[in-house]
Image (cartoon, rainbow, N blue to C red):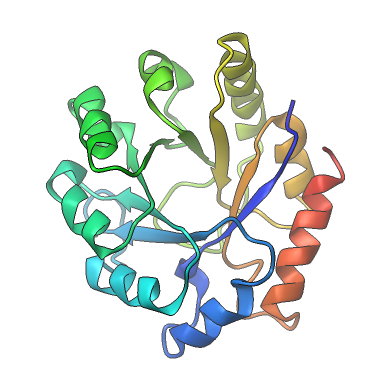
Length: 224
């Protein structure tokens, strides 16, 4: 049962010509932190930014930075992103040959650890590390680009993970990323997600980003 919903605006959709303005627009809107999508053009078909931009964002805000590493060999870059200011590092199970070892290294760096699953990846792939992590991120689109449509078949996957987490008596955040807006938010929360990552729905719209954050949380909380 979800008791509280956390909103993480994704900077993938922010205005990089005026990043400080985008951050300021959402940081006082009751958000739990900011989501930084790191893409390398290999693991996913897009390139975004690296530790230098994370460090720049860190100087702009006190909000916790949730860094999502959509990259090959994420274990080679953990220290760099923590030094840049990451409060949480999420790696993809598909990118880690030795997932447990990578999680242990993240924990040793003193930040929260998360594991992300692509749409076609079953939740059994994280079954044996659930007790070691703080967050599971279920991708509700294929990673790489913002503005994609929500994949409806991810709802049963969220439900299955929520049941597994609660049956084990664990306190783990279940996050969703991809196509999250005021329409899909109530459904993913009803399925068991409690962390909503949204970009396109919050930035660069006719509605101010602060109001968009409030509207998204209100829609999500309607199912709590």
